Image (cartoon, rainbow, N blue to C red; front, side):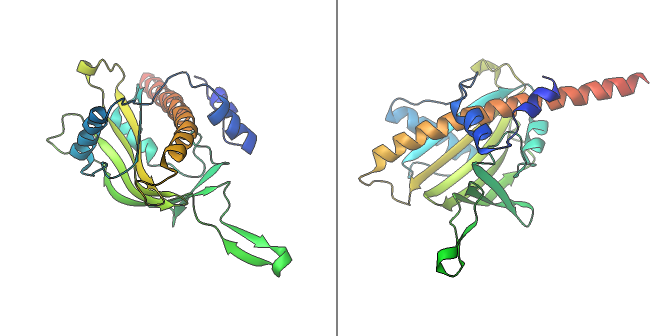
Length: 246
């Protein structure tokens, strides 16, 4: 896809983010659904095996996956540039802030607001709680020799405005037996309890509302990632081919 078409959808205003990530119907559905406790248990066991984290203690377990026709290493290296300027993230609505420029500590602020000033009370300054406060648990930059799936990932513990749990960006090679045709498969996984409580009165309502919003945004984010990463990789290959012919 030409670069000018990618630029068209960059995060430039609240309206552009709202339109691109919440009103747009994503071309590829990415949510991995589980319809029974046994299916959720299966996903939980696979997460435990691959990330060594227990997600059974969380009321919310949300997993999205998309195929990207780019080698896993290139997908992972692009993810390492995730910040407040990433074209695939709604930074006008949920601004990414790296602490000291590092990926190991990330804060996500609603509308990018870190503080408000109350002029009616002597210009009193109030610091706002981040929507997400994310601290790295483990970054797998290079797959271990025993890993046949060529997996790499970023794993965080998260807290903030409402979640207590974990968040992961996980990429592996496609598996032919699962009818995956692209070079890589990218997963976004979040597991948490609202305000640290697994069971409480508002759980069902909050989970339903949150998942409706989160699923639409995440599907559009992953579709944007696929478009941008594939475009950049194709451009890189084209440049290398032109250079080799000189």
